[in-house]
Image (tube, rainbow, N blue to C red):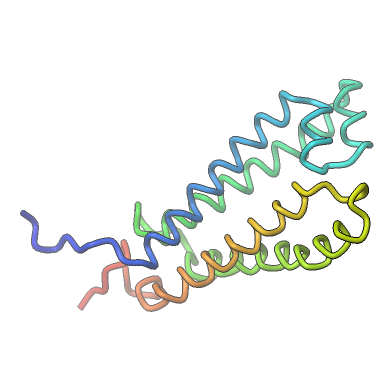
Length: 163
C-alpha cells in the first residue's frame, strides 16, 4: 500500500459535497431548458422568461445554458479544492468567492421567510427552501476552504504540502 495515501479530511468532504451539489445544479439547469415555461416558473425565473421560452425565444435557453456552465465551473473548482483532481488556478480564492456568493444568496432566507409568513399566498415555500439551501452551501463551502486554506495555498498540489 502506498504510504502517501491519507484519509479524506473534513475540509475535503465539505468541498466535495459543494462540488457535487453544483454539478447537480448544472444538470438541473439543463433540465429547466427542456421544461420550458413550467421549469422557469417553478424555479422562479419569472413570467417574462417563462413566456419567452414558451414562444420559442432562444434568450431564456441561452441565459440558462450560461448558468449551467457557471454551476459546472463552480462544481469543478470545489472538487479540485477537495483534492479530487489537480488543483485549478487560484483555487482557494475562487472557491472562497463561490462560498461568499452562496452566502449572499442565502441571506435572503430571513426576509423571504418573514414575507412568506406575513403573505403566504405571495411567496412559495420552495423559494424560502432555495435560499436556505444556498445559505447552507455557502457555510459548507467557506468552512471547507478555511479548513484547507494552507493546503490550497502556493507550493502545494493535490492538497499535499511539498517539502
